[in-house]
Length: 394
Image 1 (cartoon, rainbow, N blue to C red):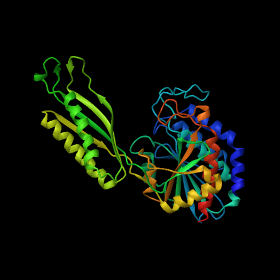
Image 2 (image 1 turned 120 degrees about the horizontal axis):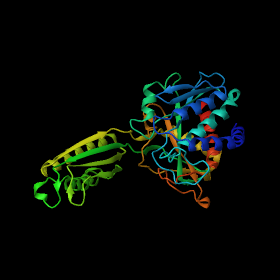
Image 3 (image 1 turned 90 degrees about the vertical axis):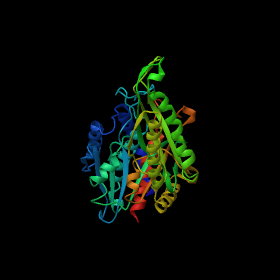
Image 4 (image 1 turned 180 degrees about the vertical axis):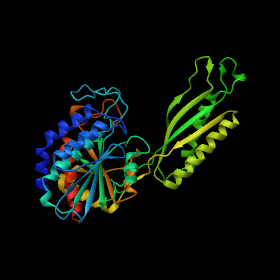
């Protein structure tokens, strides 16, 4: 079976590249993946599958049924949404949608899963059980398409015994993959602060309540939550990436807007830290005669790979790719809404190498120059097919 899958993956490699390039050239933002969803559904129907559309708005699900389909089910997930980034790459498949780009590899994930559909559709008489293909919207935007699809029953009828997801890794050479058992990725919450004061002329600060000064104290002080309240054993990150003080050289504004993110790997500490941040921000602002509205948008939980499933999966990846191409990963403080699936079923989320230094393909995700070595598509589709069929054996 392994050689069959490798052969089928090689045979569809050209089509995988064409599919990925089409998706890359036509990116759509979170929960707006209307054309992408139609494209995916058409591809699935062309394989003789019966996709279910409109789940969580633009999600698509299809079943590849082998012999005795009720015996066991394994689910595979790909996300479909792009980012609000203007692409800087000069390539034939450059984004044609201004200000929108597949800068996180979701075009790769979707193309790879369509490749899995093609491979497994040709092997229906060779395996027992069902493979559920989950094409998910809105990974990049809270509350996350995964949570919405779960609410709409994506993990039922049939319920999977295990679930796999893969994510591009521009720090891992193409042809290699990476795994980590247990805690792998962080929770992520979005923080929105409105610091209010009393604006006026910059030459008369005594007549104003300066929200810019209050904000500067808040940004520095809130870092104490991580540096002095978090256990050194719990990874934590607090970052503020957007500060808008719409005044001028001689104008103190009435308010300052601040946006940031808090990430950690412990749910109890997550709750405690958010409470401490809100209390500290409001208290400092009040002490400086201003006011702080501290709003929290709850994001994704931490992602925990099932240890036994991940151990099995890593062994199977070694069979497929060779030991030299299977790596151990460290904790990654990025967040992924695949975490919601890991809370509901045994799951494994792993990394797919896309880097090629010789060709200059080295840019990180979420950058305007992100791209991949497209050899990763053959690896991604073939390996995921192999993992699914091996796990179906129980």
